[in-house]
Length: 112
Image 1: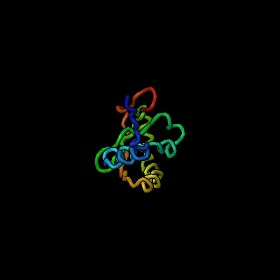
Image 2 (image 1 turned 90 degrees about the vertical axis):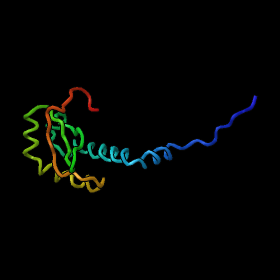
Image 3 (image 1 turned 60 degrees about the horizontal axis):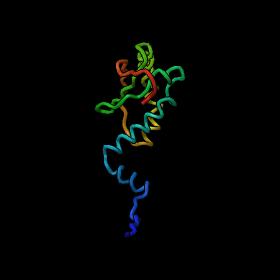
Image 4 (image 1 turned 30 degrees about the vertical axis):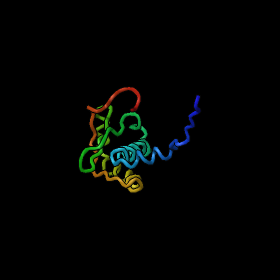
């Protein structure tokens, strides 16, 4: 029986690099990285009551909120939140020009 040697494996780094060449995957990873900073910029009482849900057109970031009270409170501090997001946006080279707080996007349970 002939022995087969497998020596042309791609390293994990090569696979990740090739995936990041896809602009849609690169955009999704960048957005996901930005979303991880949400809990650092939002007031402690809203950390578990709001979370980034997605991005809309023209730099709109949609934030899912537990209820309308949370959405209203965050909407009143929108300028401060955008200001706190600024350093993260510069680092990731992503633009967020507005925040939309949406109660309908809230899902109970673990964050996805």
